Image (cartoon, rainbow, N blue to C red; front, side, top):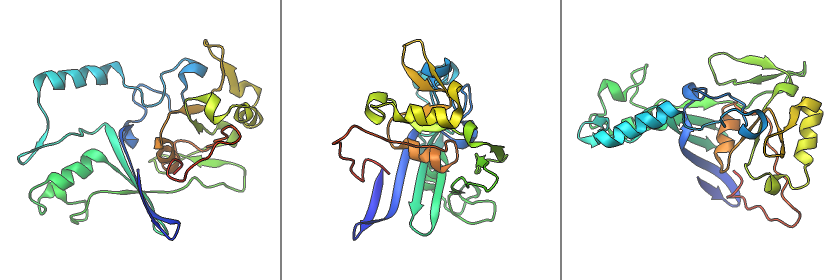
Length: 233
């Protein structure tokens, strides 16, 4: 992640997530709000067995997609770049499309042009999930099919280490108030966790929040801990 700060005010930020599934592939083999400890499902973004096998085959064959004389690293299912500019909104692009645009030796070719004939990479503008007056929220507002769900069905996006981000269990209590008593269960490891949650480390969480795949983010570290602005996007 990189940011431009002027007089103490963040003006522009870029977040690269090379292993994050692209928007149209994020449900491949996994539940949108799954937590391996809480409900036994594979965690969000975990590689499927099929993906791992395909990756190994590609390595053994030492083949890569080429654009002109250059090899392309990102091949479509994973890798996203987020860009936010103060006053101009937040945008996302799959890394394989951005890479194709950069590597294309002929900037006037069809592969470098969008549907309007402009020679620009295809960025998608992201919109913050709105809170509606009827106490419903729109999840996946950036997807092709917007679905209405109540706050009790919305998703928490949290760090993996629960003893760090929630040492007193405050977030678990909040989740019970929002999701109900069944919203928190104890997994096989004996640790209680939020059923409807995504757990991952790093600032990728902010990318998921931006594109509407999670609605709640809480970070309540232990007393005395100092958060730096560059650690929390």
